[in-house]
Image 1 (spheres, rainbow, N blue to C red):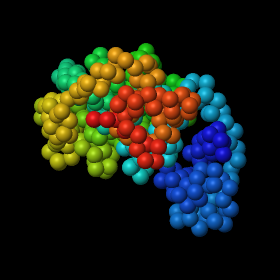
Image 2: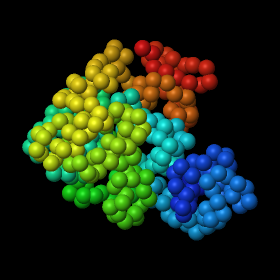
Image 3: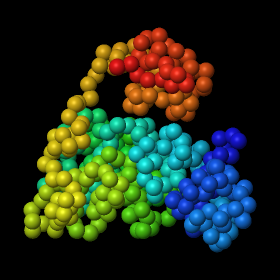
Length: 368
């Protein structure tokens, strides 16, 4: 089966009425793949735990393939990367979330599986204190190679994204709608710049209409894609607290900036700390200590050579492999968007230069 056919069935799987991410993954596990789900006999689908006659009937709604084809055209036209949960490029940390989306759509250049990822969330109406703390923490993380994730909303989200770009950190925005739009619209210029060194990610198809119920749903991606979540100013109810609760359910670290006891915009953070649902932090140093990120990202002699002697294609592969530490040739090929022969030639050169090492099974890793 070619890649287009595989993608068609994968997108269609996410569109089956009544089938969520958990049940969809269960269907794939029982049937052996997205295409196999649609080719499986109804009598066998009914026997799968949690899939009754009604859901089995939904699988046979063939009209969803027309919509899936339409989405494939959009993906191709705008150079969007579709990532199925079984793909090598699908965010590693999100793979471990049972209810993580079966498919996400990504536009950008960030490594969604890099070693250090921090989600930053908070109120849409931060105080001057909240603005200052958010800016300070993100700036202090600039030497630690952290990918900053947030929701592209007003307030804390916007500050986190902007500061990350200002200090050269990659930053990714998680959207509650398709990649054909940006909400709020005022953040569109910022979103376009984020694509250059970070990116935008969503589980929603293009032409998805704005729906307030989708924002809590996208928060599980914000929580699941990261190693930890930082809450900077939040009321006792709201999206930031939902994200923190989800992060806790995933056994991820949660941090909160304390605030004045009589400030409603800090009541959520103070409550998280009081109930031991978040660790109290004052600075990026606290976060790095608790996450064991104290060792700053250093430019080794290999990296010095990387930036002075390698061309753009070679550098692209080397930087990606350096983040992953180890990968097989198929993963490298899929990421690079180059021909197989070109990738093989580059890997051979990098090996001769002593920058990487070949391993059994056509795997490669960066030499330390």
